[in-house]
Length: 449
Image (cartoon, helix red, strand yellow):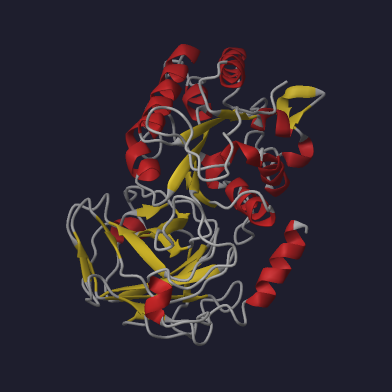
């Protein structure tokens, strides 16, 4: 089934996707409802797994994130990677200086693409420890109580948040690849209609995770990276980031049952602060703390290299960047996670490119491909480079800035991922791979030359 055909099929399912499937709400939320394929090894049937995430970032010096919200309702649109029979959300005040209170919150299935409306019969009011309101401490995160709602894979959800009092500067994710909405004044969390939500926004505020009860899913792959993971230059509202396309491939496969979580931050770096905390600083929060995580797919480092193209910034060395990778590898393995390395993609004719920076990129890619330090390799470089000019992106994959792919390039990146790399439930604490019943050992494969 092609990606477009699959999307049309899933859209047609939307008319019934809000219905609870069999059993009482209590049965659904305790995992007692049966699944066609049974419960995978290592999962009890009551476990949550992340189906969507957006890495939290600090507010900017001006604009909506600095102003915050008061007596306003946010309707934030997200796309699931896997479905499930129970839903909860995670809210973050990671970069807030003061506590923030949300007086009410709800979740429902989006009625149609481009709209702020919610499908009739799917709106669920959320609670936090049984209360309708929740206060998140400065620097804190909270999980909602689960609600009885059946959602499909690759389906749009609307998370609605109301804050009566001023929030202050807001924790957010800057690059929104989906359009969300802010209402006129007042609490509109219990409304399915779109009339109150006249203002469009392109960021996700406070919401940093959605989780589902999915006993047939045996883990989550966290894609850690910069703007190329985040989806910069992909078509907004087209679900065209490489993690989006990867989720579609996994859902179409019969061999792998895992969610895909996009932990990209545009302009992020491995070693130093670019935009957002560097990968070493945010690894625990954005990767290890993800619910159900079993695997990491790392594609990061081009901003570390490219920053050195400026005469004001000292060029990072290949050895320094490799040392950063080794730290991430050790930290992933210490938590029993498998970590797969992605080669750095071309950048010729972009301001990041110099002969010196290209030499570093090639050295780093040689390490990723041949060192054996990672548990597997995805050769993103090979997937989108021009065979006749391998320091450049293939023209049909180029967004136009000579460093970011367009939609077709992101799809080609997802197609380059060998899904067998992610079989099983990650690594054991002793460095060996976890195996469930009837599972073989994972394979250390790649697409290197």
